[in-house]
Amino acid sequence: SFDGMQGQKELPDSQMQMTLLLLNDHLGKGVNTY
Image: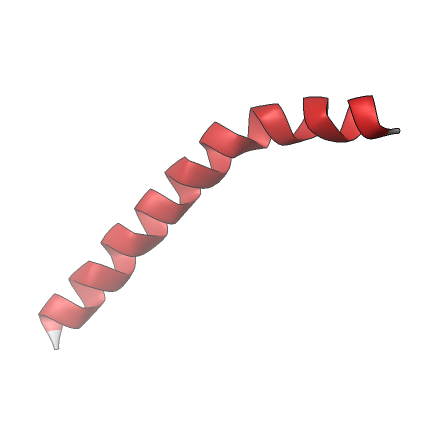
């Protein structure tokens, strides 16, 4: 259970960072537009 959690958290970590980066970029552009 614990091992699986760590293994699952390892992959989405970079994916989450990418999503956050994209979201930040999107939000930043939205703020810049206004």
